[in-house]
Amino acid sequence: MYNTWLEHIMLLFQGCSVVITAGILLFSIPALRQNLLERNTNIKIQFAVVVLFSVLAIYGTHAGKVVKLDGALIEESSGQLSGAQAVINFRDIVVVTAGLAAGPWCGLAVGTVAGVERYMLGGFTALPCALASILCGVFAGYMRQRNRTMLTPFKASLVGASSVGLQMGLILLLARPLPWAVEFVQQTGVPVLLTATIACYAFQQVLYGLGKIHSDLTARQIEVRAQRAEIRALHAQIEPHFLMNVLNAIKALIRLDQDKARHYVTLLAEFLRDTRAYAVLDLIEISDELSHLRKYLDFQQLRFEKKVNYREIIENEKLLKYKLPPRTLLTLVENSLIHGFSSEQNEYQITIHISQDNDRLEILISDNGVGIEKNKLPLLGKKPVDSKKSGGGLGIYHLQKTLNEFYNDANVLAISNNPTGIGARVKISIPA
Image 1 (cartoon, helix red, strand yellow):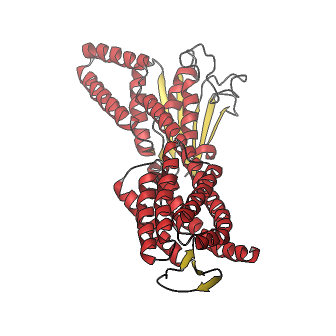
Image 2 (tube, rainbow, N blue to C red):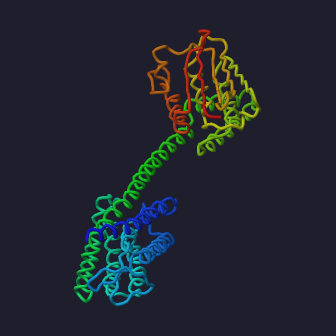
Image 3 (cartoon, one colour):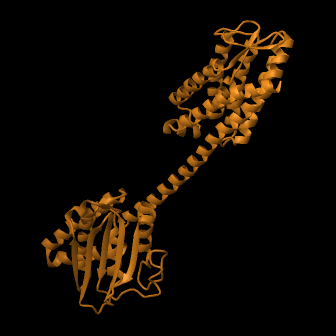
């Protein structure tokens, strides 16, 4: 008896490896994986799954071992079973895993196809085995459906074991003569139970692991979308005081220089249009960012009585085609103008230096202002800081979040005072 069990277990484990491999291959297809894990009822996906598992189930029947039961267990091979023959196989393991993967309708369809094919094969267990395939598929699919989340491997193994119990019960109830049915159950029950339990556990382990990864990725995608929505909302904002100062300056110009006022009205319309257009983008070319920044500085010349001396140093014109998040440079220059200068200064100097160091894009923004207090330097970019002026480091804090969102740990935002002791500088280093 034990030698027979061992022989059958070895045969069935070969079939189990086919089922587990099929599960891995099945879930390596992104469209199938997403639809199955999200319990989508897409007809094309369901049909594809039914076809795949039905082929595997029929293969599971014919890859089994044909036995003759007339008081002894005799191995034979035949394309059609005689009345005294049965077959030990892994068909119902495939049917159960189909239900576990895609729900009751898939389990019913695969079980029906495999069951009808098994019934046509004949043998004294034809009817109970055919019914078992159908009922096992529905049962496994129902267990998949009634659980809001993916079944754990342990629960799946219980489903597999229960399906074997159902199959063996039907054989004892319907197969005749009864002594043959009892002999068949004695010879095959334990091997089928053991292998079905292990196969369902292993198959579900694959599904469960992929399901957790999928859930984690989905949660991460939701988080990323929320973060990007927040970033885009920030990009779309225009500082109210800036807009009010510009409108007041244009209002004054209307009386003094109407041509100049018309120029700034046109420029403001372009600036607002570009702000809105860039707000829905993740990345823009450096050339576009610099163009937007120049418009902003042109307006600031109206605001500040002192001259703003702005300079760009571009080491290679090709660098202008590289991309970065919108408002990256504008945020830093705006921060410099608001927080970086004292009213006693005669001239405000801001320099942007763009270069490439191997595979890194290096951007250095420096000014000739009052510098940054030493106790605030370690905090900038990590959290908002107290400030006598508006903003409180929010601009740099949100910029750091934006860079983290797109470059993770590959970005470097370094804020420091100039080595000369005059002014501050910010260095951005991102993948080129």
